[in-house]
Length: 77
Image (cartoon, rainbow, N blue to C red):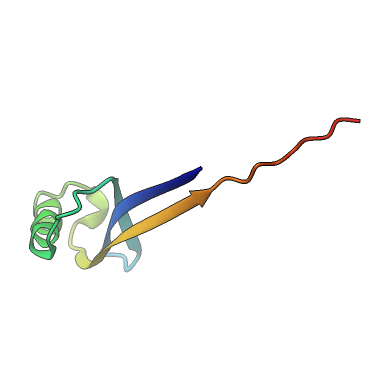
């Protein structure tokens, strides 16, 4: 059975210089760069996460993961 999952990962840099990733499952397929940029700016402007106070936007990407199951025969004995 094939199982593909997509995640939108928005990456920020905290004021301490650490990376902070916000991951959202199943983003819209027609999501634009401008929409993601606007969402990231809103998250930052509203201080939605205390870690991001005085931080900065780094980048964003979609990540697709495909899982393939193997048919395994379990032999008891």
